[in-house]
Image 1 (spheres, rainbow, N blue to C red):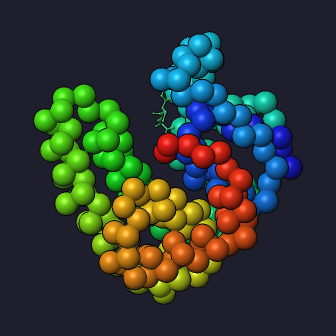
Image 2 (tube, helix red, strand yellow):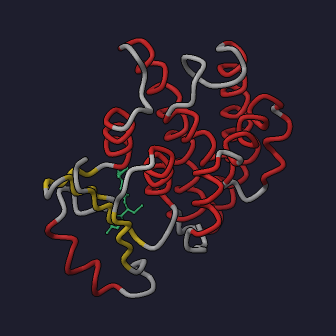
Image 3 (cartoon, helix red, strand yellow):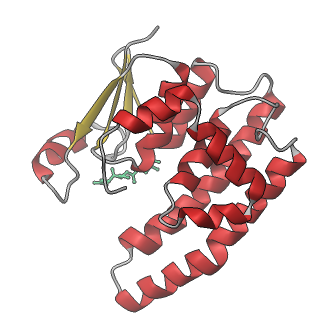
Length: 207
Ligand SMILES: N[C@@H](CCC(=O)N[C@@H](CS)C(=O)NCC(=O)O)C(=O)O
């Protein structure tokens, strides 16, 4: 097995789906956490110039570094048994992951990045009233069309893990209850022993 070190801020954020993939795979890795820039900038400012795109997360694989959270997650899924068995299955998994990524980017913009208070309020309202319901509805439809239990191939994959992480990190968790098959998937994944064990011990962070 390669020697893995995942470096991110002490947050769930973009690293948490990767951590969950590694936990489910049962692969040993170092979970390196540095203070969030708003807590203490020094460590990040020292590290930033050495990272490929001046951002985190990064994953060191036997000393070779890859960045971009989705690329890292995809690498881990493929390497450790949570990807598809053929190119079509992988395409279907990518579809789910990319759809969730689109929603996540809009969420980050509305809740973290936007500085103008009026625009921020508008973006947040749009997220709650349009972006999130549409995304959850489409995920529910996709899940139903693929047999209700898992998003692809009738077995647990990194696509399910992305959906689990996104839904279970929503501040208002009960919004997912309107989508019964998605809610059931989130509940089932929360009971996977490796996921449950990780959630019990992982650092308690704001997001
Ligand atoms: N597309 C990149 C985005 C990475 C990103 O935005 N990272 C943020 C933390 S979530 C970061 O490193 N911020 C600190 C900075 O840009 O200085 C990915 O998915 O990894």
